[in-house]
Image (cartoon, rainbow over the protein chains, first blue to last red):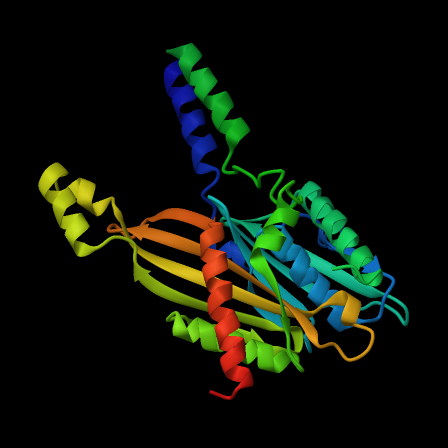
Length: 138
Length: 178
């Protein structure tokens, strides 16, 4: 009987992952506000085009290949293939009269990236790129 | 048996469904500057659109089809689907090791190419006439079962030097309106 309990417990722990697959369409992941904070940084520039170009070149430095880009909407989507598939969308929009807000969200294989560390790493690379662009360095 | 089950249970709880993103996936690698140099070349030209159309010309020369472009940001994305192994190779594999081995061989691949043009930063102040073109290749490979066997960036230096040779020709041809 004890064995049976253990077995069913194990089975439950495995099945636990298989929730209804359509639910993921509107899944917000963790906290919506928290996610936005984690995925966004403000930069002291109003040049949307230059910022998007910097985002593209930083993504290329990180090994991404661009999928789509749109200046009017201020979006760039890119994919990195390195034994895994990592897809990322970056949006750039005005935050106030002096700042732009850059937001990035990533999807690793078939799951959203909710860990703050990769976003911190991305924004630290982007900040370097933004600095170099501001200094007119290639 | 009980110990084994407890261990298994603990592991399954710890692992859950997630494998997680590699921690270095979004950090700059040590060789990223080297890679940038390998993947970039400078070109002279009066405007960005000319350089981009030379790029689209060269990608068509190589059999790529355009997936996406945004001239305002200097972006051109294209791809092509090709066989990853020839029918003859798969047949030989089937003869030697059976159908299973032949089916798990790489069969088809999608090669993606993304070309980004941007003005050289130092010439940015006035009217730019120097442009940096950066190309990056990646590919997805499937076997006969339709399973993905490889997801990778292509980093052979030979590939990039050949690509830029072709692009130089294309830029010249575009300038001469040929």
